Length: 237
Image 1 (cartoon, rainbow, N blue to C red):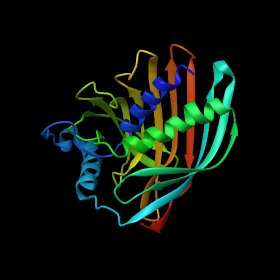
Image 2 (cartoon, rainbow, N blue to C red):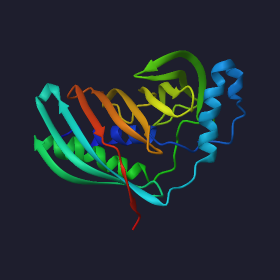
Image 3 (tube, one colour):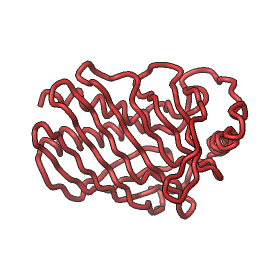
């Protein structure tokens, strides 16, 4: 359908916004402790980025994907296997699918292809070089005490977003990212919003839920929800 090409661009932007490290420009001088007591958690987050060590094994997880275009009464559900290689490259293998073929090809298919493509591009992740941080509040997500920071991108670049970063107060690990892309990849889009939840278990931090919504000028809302099982560690080929 006509929207497919442009929706793929939107998913590409969402994929870019999920990249976890890297910078757009020269290092920016920013002391997280300038945020007061809440800066200690953010410093732990930055320290973890600096100390990150490349894995030697791949991570493989089962993902359940639900997508729909409510205005067209089209929907579909897929079960796939996601593999993250030690170098960060992502690949998917479909295991089963039920639903409309348009959703399979033009929504879920393009979503997965876009994420695979963006895993091979330079990252524009959440860093002091790419974002301005502001303490917003303390909150809880389940049993986890968190510190929530407001994020504002330093540049209005495709893939950057304005929103929130939730960090575990004790460890500095990411609990949630949410927001709205600051630059739409096409005039077809009115907005692109998302939320991603993470957990840390058995020494691995991984994405457990991603919920995204694209509001388009042609077919209305396009919804995609992805739920990830705990990944297993396998030897890299």
